[in-house]
Length: 111
Image (cartoon, rainbow, N blue to C red; front, side, top):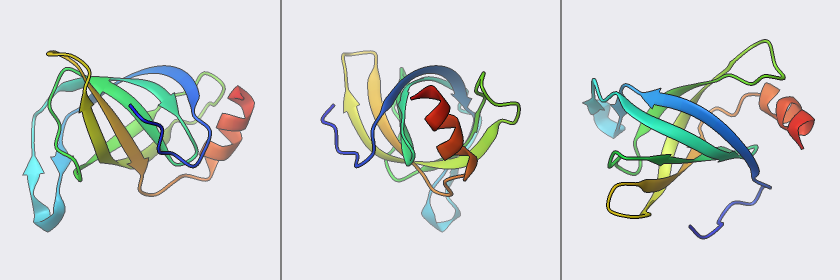
């Protein structure tokens, strides 16, 4: 995927599961149980891979647990781009909608 981010990406390996997606106008896709693997992170968002087809411009709640932080980061992620890697995997770009202040300190420790 072409790097369109303004901030440096840091490689990371986090496993999450998306349960619900939210769109504009109160549209909700429930009970997805879509596992994702976060493969990079920046101050403004994440890159992740999933076997599920996820719609762009939808939002999900994310809890990011870091080994260097006692407190998890809870944020909302907007899916801003997607690209098929192969027939079974998709690469996504997600943007933090309410970028938590703690993310800057945590990423500085990883850099």
